Image 1 (cartoon, rainbow, N blue to C red):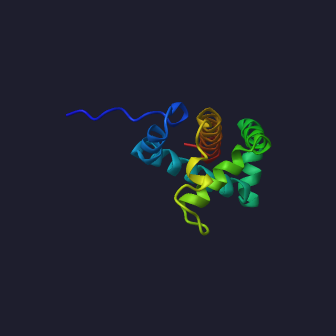
Image 2 (cartoon, rainbow, N blue to C red):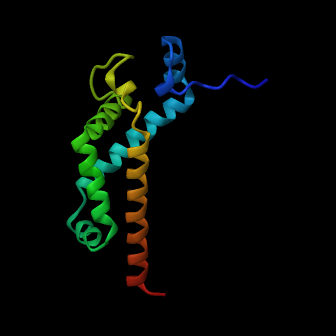
Length: 134
């Protein structure tokens, strides 16, 4: 028997729809994705001097830095951090904490950030492969 589709949280028309969508596996996975993305952002911002030199030489790095700046300016980065704090129990939080609902409506900018990180890391791997030789 096929289960009923889970409503999109952004399109929830009733509190019951909103509850179903935020408790669904899809939305749990989305919050986990946000959490791990924030961990990646923290690691990016605290990279070693050697890594900074490597990434600074790559053209796609500028687009990634622009994306991070845009997310910070629009407040989405703070929401990503709030989601991470909620998911990792960083402090005393309730079930309906802001971190639980933070991902609502921000899928597009996070997909772009994900794409920018992927482009930078693939460029870094190509660069390292060229340095190492055959």
